[in-house]
Length: 264
Image (tube, rainbow, N blue to C red; front, top):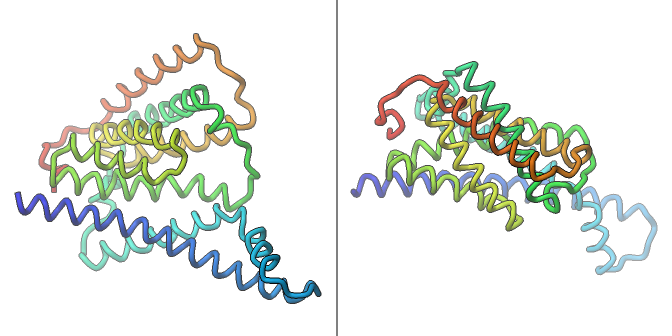
């Protein structure tokens, strides 16, 4: 019992480290742009006013969320690689990157598309907000699923499963994943998505399956905000049916591993 409690707290520490990486990235980006703003503000020839200066910085820094995300992903990847290198463990083997089933990866990617369309259909007011597309945002859409799956379904799921079992580990990991989002509606559907990702990860025994599912979910969501029309009840019902079939197919494409493999 004591050993399991220590493992659980260790997993929580890893999650806090993940959050700290995001905070460090935000602080660094804000500091950089603030300095740049100070230099720019000094050249515009206006009389110094503290209130207008603060507003000027806020306007300058606003819209840099994609930059913050990109920097945080780089920090998290660096920390993960260094952590496993110091402990002389294989990051790819531990997280499930060393194995991939083509069928599981394929069906997982299709499932990601279906789930994203369902999310758009059920929560259009949250997922249909158009955003400006730039190179940094594209990098975030691609790099985000890799980093988040490495952290949540690669490291945290394995740690929590080792301390309190796969079912509880799935729920805890999915809860922490959902709390990483901001909007209440996003928290709800992110929790459901997190549970699905955890189940596919365990059943397929490969992290690549959930990476591709997450990537397909993000890309489809970004496209849906611009081109996806309103879906009818029959279309939504069809998406549910196809999603269920793809979920079963994605879960059946992995190799069989003893339960203890997920509990290390």
